[in-house]
Amino acid sequence: MNAKKLKDARQRLTIEYENLIKSINRNRTAAEDIKVENTEDEGDLAIISHDKHLLSNLNQGVYDHLKFIKEAISALDRGQYGECLSCGKDINEKRLLAVPWATLCIRCKEETEAERVSSRLVPAGVEEETDF
Image (cartoon, rainbow, N blue to C red; front, side, top):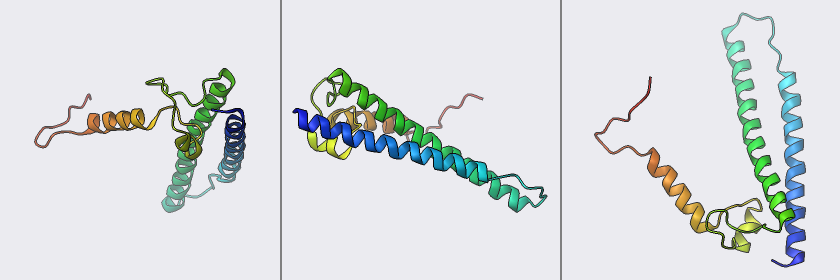
């Protein structure tokens, strides 16, 4: 990848990073605004609980995304940006334009997703084991 494309990738990653930080700050402010009122109304308490849970889930997704962005910036710094972590081949530039924090090429990503999906499938008539 040439220097201009690397510079553009760094700029896209930096903008995405800054947007995620803003999102985290907005979510933190929103969480602070959700206060448990002195209410015994179960409906109000359920709404407050739901809102807090929703914000927590949103933040977890944002933190995960932020981690991927940091890893991509580190890969840029090491000169390894755009290399698939699984097979070592170059990640297609179109993929990096769409997902600048991608760490896997399309083939490896599809294989990983297929493995993940198949590991969750349970054949018909077979009960899934649980550890209780």
